[in-house]
Every structure is written in C-alpha cells, then in structure tokens.
Length: 127
Image (tube, rainbow, N blue to C red):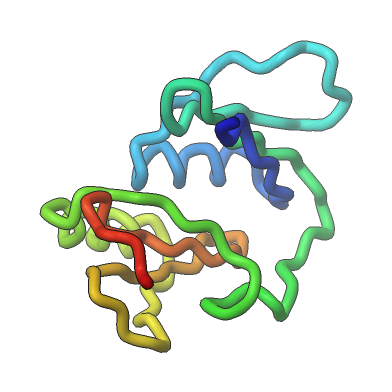
C-alpha cells in the first residue's frame, strides 16, 4: 500500500499551488470538475498528489510543530541549500529541529502555517 494523496486547507489556493510548485517542484495537474470549492491538485511523485482546497477562514492548529502534526518529505541532501533559499524566497519560515538525528533534516512552516520536515532522501531509518 502506498500513499495516494493528502488534502490541505488553504485561504489562497493559487498562492499555495504556486508555493509548492516553486519550492518543492510539485507539478500542478488538472483536477476533477466535480468539486464545488476552489481547489488545485499537484503531483508530488508518480501516484502521489497534494490536493489544496479553499477554506476562507482557515487557521492552522497550535499542534503544528516537530512533535505535533507535520508532514515529512524526502529530498536529496545535496539540494538542501538551494531548497532552503527557494523556501525563504517564497515566504516559508525555516525551523531548526528540536532534537538531533543521525541524518540531516530541517523543518519549514509554509505560508498557510503547516509544518513540513525535509529529510535526507538517502537516510537510514532511526533505530
């Protein structure tokens, strides 16, 4: 079984779509026409998507943080510096990890307030 998609609420669908496309390189794709709210779909990887839905009064939970609710993605460590630059340029807040791990990683808060963890794609699992 693999992950198919995740859905995030956002106050601004277009800005959120452009943020993920411009920073993580996720590809905007056509979405079904049977949705009655403003929405955007992005391809993360083959068979994996992000769905963005407009919720005008959306506010992130106080639980969004390293030890709370967050999303983790893998990315080649050689590209971390460039990714951090793109994230900062597009309005993300870079966040240092709270605890040390045997592999490189960092966190960022996207413009909607969601927390993402970026982990070295070649890391060995923690034991």
